[in-house]
Image 1 (cartoon, protein in one colour):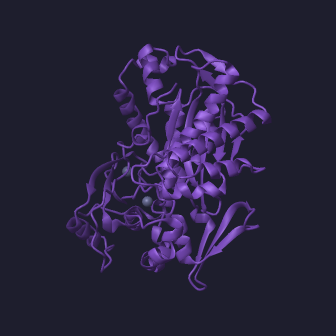
Image 2: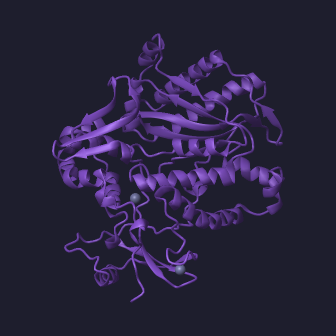
Image 3: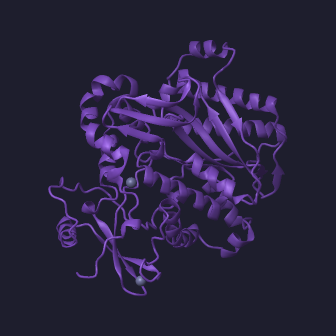
Length: 451
Ligand SMILES: [Zn+2]
Ligand SMILES: [Zn+2]
C-alpha cells in the first residue's frame, strides 16, 4: 500500500484535538456526567442519553483512528486519506458550520424565489423559556405560532385568506452567551402568492402593525402552552397585565432579490451553532472558561462571561437537539406541499417547470451539484480545495471508505500514525463526505398544511 498519504497539513486544519473545546471535554466531561443529576438536573432536566451519543461522535470527529475515506486523483493517481466527520448538529463546531453552509447553498440553489426577503425574529419572555427546555417538542410549535401570527395579520391586511409568503423558520435555543433562550429566526419573502401562482405584494407594515403581530404571537403562544398544560389561565392573566409583555417581534430590512450575499449570510446566521469556538478560551491553569459574546449582554452588563468548566459544559450541551428534531421548517409557498402542487400545475418558474420531473429527479440533480459544492464548502470553511489534487491540481474522487478497525490499524501503523492505546472504536453512524444522501428538504422538512 505504498501510494497512501494522509492529507498534507494544510488539508487537516481542523485538528480537533488542539481546540479548547476538545481539551475542556477531555478534562471535565466525566466529572460533568458524574455530578449532572445532583448539580444540573433541576435546571436542565433529566440526563439525556443524546448528550453522550453526540459527545462520543464529536470525540471521534476528524480522527483517523475511527475511519476515513480513500481519495484518489483522477489525473495522477495520487491517493489521500480523509478522516470522517461526526456531522453532529448543534454541537460540533466544524460540522455545524458545514451544515449551515450546506443549508445556505441549498436555499440559494433550490428554494429562494427571485423576490426580496426579510429576516424576522420572534422571542418569548424569560418566564416561559424553561418550558421549551424541558419539553423540546414545543420548539416546532413555537415556530408555528410565529408563522400563524404573521399570516393572520397578512390575511387581514390583504383581505385575502388564501395568500401566503414563503417562510424558512428555524427554532434557535441559545442567546449570545450560549445561555438558554428559545426564539424563532426566519427568512420570509416580501411577497405573497395564492394557489394559482398570482403575486401579492406585502402590505406596508409599520411599528403599530409589528405590535399587533407581537400581540397575536403572545396570544398564540399562551394558547399553545395552555393546551399543553404547561401554564395556568391565572399566569396568562397575570402576564397580560404586565406593561412589557416580554414577547418581541423583530423585522429586518428588506434584502433585494439580487442580493445573494446578504441572503447567504443570513441563511448561515439563522442556522448557526450555539457557540463559536473562536470566542471560547479554556484556561486549564485557572480552570475557567471565558466566552466572548458577540454583543454586550444587558443582564450580565458585559460582553463576556467567565464560567466554571462543568457549568459551561452543562450550558452548551443543553442545546443539543432531540434526535430527529426538525431544525429547519418550511412554510407557505416554501413548503413541500405547496411546491409540489405548483410543479404539478406547471406554475413554477420556467427552468424548474421545464424539467417536468418528479421531485426525486430534482433531488438527484441537487445531490450531484452538492458533490461539486462540497469542495466549495471545504474551501470556505478550511480554506483548502479538498477535491483538487495537491500534487497536480486534478480532480479527486472518493474511492472507498475504510471502517474496519483492523484495516484502519494496519494502514495507520504503516503510515506511522497509529497511537496506542486507543479506546475501542464505538460503531456509530459515521458518515463520510461527500455525503450525497443528505438533502435538507428530506432531512429537515416538517410538513405543514397551509391554509
Ligand atoms: Zn464533527
Ligand atoms: Zn494529481
